[in-house]
Length: 497
Image (cartoon, rainbow, N blue to C red; front, side, top):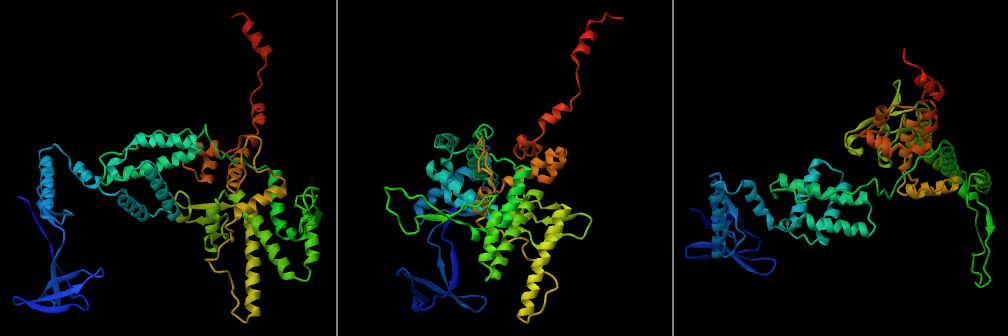
């Protein structure tokens, strides 16, 4: 037979409490922050400290669960009659478990069913943090789960079902949301449902049967690879543009007759392109001859930017992975130079050794040598100890937060369209597509290209990160054996021996 009770506790005497006597006992009285008056008995503890003893305001329930063990659980009720009703329900559930009608998992799920969904989301986020997931990824997952819960009116776990999710995904598709984004919402829901099932918050995942959208039939952001000629132009523009921006010509602007001229509305700076960028750079050097420090700064910015692009193309690194590299992760001393990518900085959280081609390793070494020389010169001028080498925690590149915008301007100056005739886009991540495409175009085996791209499946390397437009398909067909129809016809018409 179970019982309900209010649990006793002891706590230090609150500051400012009034000590009085009643029926031979010492009583402490104090007011809470909200002004309510509280009183409790004063007791002497074993550690010779004086404390007050009180009882919890809500009732606890003690009973034997389905496995026969005595457990204590809070009822959440301040009223005794309501607490006894909760105890009766708990004992009824334990009896059904002992008789085999219910399973312990079903009982656990029933206990979680009426809790607010936000509490389960908080616990799920703590689970992801304990796994070591990326904080930005965790924040994105929570935003998506909260958006779906708000739109589908999911306030508690027992309200979640697949039907509203199907309707919501159809509505989002009609609103123009791409298949890949819809699948990412579905993935967040399925992972959350699996976690709820593993932690006995649900008996089954309600989102397991939600269908996936066909991403191949609805690719909204398909990237293309750059050709060798485009890469040469892009690297040249990236190298010269920071300084050339200061030497652009002033050209007149046609003013419409119906609009009165405004201040500085009759001229603008000439846009840069491959043909005029060299002349603009020379004009900038002449115009800034009295400010050599600015010239040196802009020249270093262009050098670093071009070296970043080249590193992305020749290593297949992602933008975030490149930004995470420090000098301590570079190994240039062995027969093959490579960079050690930490697991925390890689997308799949496994870590990898990224091979660096010899010419790129030479340029990176020269770049780091220039940086060390500037640091030594600065220390020499300020009377500080001259460093022998750069600190190991120094970032390889200072990747700007606005690299996407900078890359688009470099594309425009290099005469490379942002989108081609098939609406395929060129962005910073397209440099990784370029890396994979040129590996396949060079005849590298698919398994080797997959390892270089650090993909889990060869289909991802072959279908997503390989641009078939740059592959020599016609040359591959020419390599097939010659088939002479006349010889075959003569062979088929010859009488049998």
